Amino acid sequence: MLIPSIDLLGGQIVQLVQGEKLRLAFDDFEYWIEKFSKYPLVQLIDLDAAMRQGENTALVEQISKRLPVQVGGGIGTVERARSVLAAGARRVIVGSSLFSEQDGVGRVNTGFAAELAKAVGAEQVVAGIDARGGQIAIKGWRAQVALTPAEAIPALEAHVGAFLYTHIDGEGLLKGFPIEIARQLKPLTARQLIVAGGIRAQEEIDALAGLGVDCVAGMAVYTSLLAV
Image (cartoon, rainbow, N blue to C red):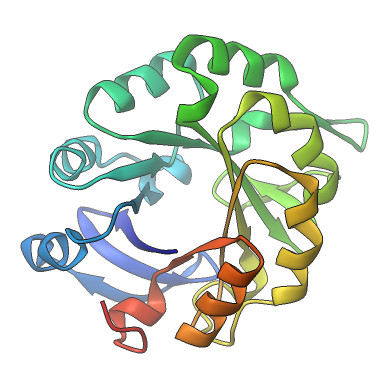
């Protein structure tokens, strides 16, 4: 399944390269909402909130009322998760708050994951596993912890309904997603596995579907490499 992505930054729909360089920006929300209305799930990310430099809460709420979305970006508390779900989101994507590092040792915050699952229901929680160079990145991809996705996924299995793995090394570059990573990660979980980062062609989507893996695409959608 293809899940189109709407990334919000400064009140616009944007596409960034590896979470840093602005490549595309759009103001025509109606156009894209209409385009994506046929999809069973759309990903909606508040990049300002993820980067801790502001928020696009009003826009997130407006879009959540019109599209079936899973929402991420700055969701680090039970209260915030509840608020986003109450505003209309189907699921929340939680990333940075699930991980920490102490004395060079990466940790999965299973206590918070369990608390969140109990509060809103595990099926409404998507664990965001963002990786650069094989290690998990947090805080808007500006920091990393000494943990690999393969270590994190089993630890979170009981507390989430899905995993979202983002391959930062390929994000926005349109060079294709490394299928081998999906092949390695899928056996680690019985939950839905969604991958993102570099998706550029229908053939990739089909190959991932063959593994039982769904995918998110942004840049390829907004540059018309993928028809929506």
